[in-house]
Length: 302
Image (cartoon, rainbow, N blue to C red; front, side, top):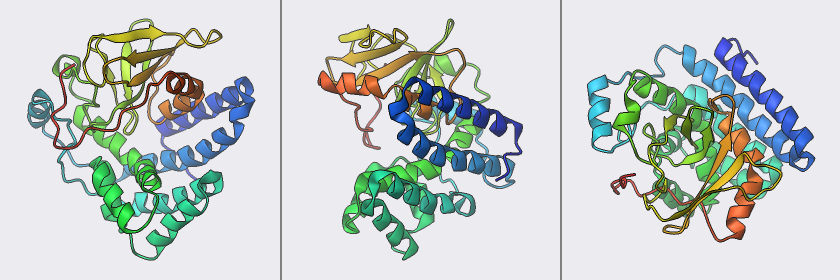
């Protein structure tokens, strides 16, 4: 497989180093690391192909994007975007197979069979994933007697490299974005963050889908905007740089980690796995990761 784009090569090298370190630090995660590696490397290859494609990415007028953000609407929400089926379509099949091997078993194989048999259209699946339309995915899964969470996950994984490049296309030129967006939802795609990352000078929310990072603008809960949350705490004595923010209002939690370099797409997924012990600590104390808000809901102020 050709990783010719220098940026992609750099991301792959960073990923390989982090996986190696993670397996050394936490050997019990090695099976999960191997599955994740099989998912991330094709994602990087697709990112490379999309970045060099002449027709994969639409352009977005700056004034138009600014107006959407000003209304509290993520840049990509409601946009009609060609889903690059020739590049991303094969990932749907590949990821179903990887997840089947990785423990999802027959549930993932049924998704693959439905796709191969024509019951699922690749363009529709990818378009719905890009639109973050979870209700439509779940409705389709129920109609076909497929596992809803798997159908969502596979579509999300396959569409993510395009979502990332679309986020860059829409938002890269907005130097004043921190002042234009103060919400917990991703300003690009409208997803919740996978985690927050802190350096000596920054505090950034990192999207769980497109990988966009945006500045944390307040100390309120990322999800509901409430002031009354438990704040940052370090539940793991041996990992002082791994923190939990837990909200007593909505019951949501967010992981915050100290990093030296920004977690460019798709490297946040590795840190999400590396901090799975924080998820356990949060769930054990009754907190959860909230579902995405419905498309018709207005995001609350942060």
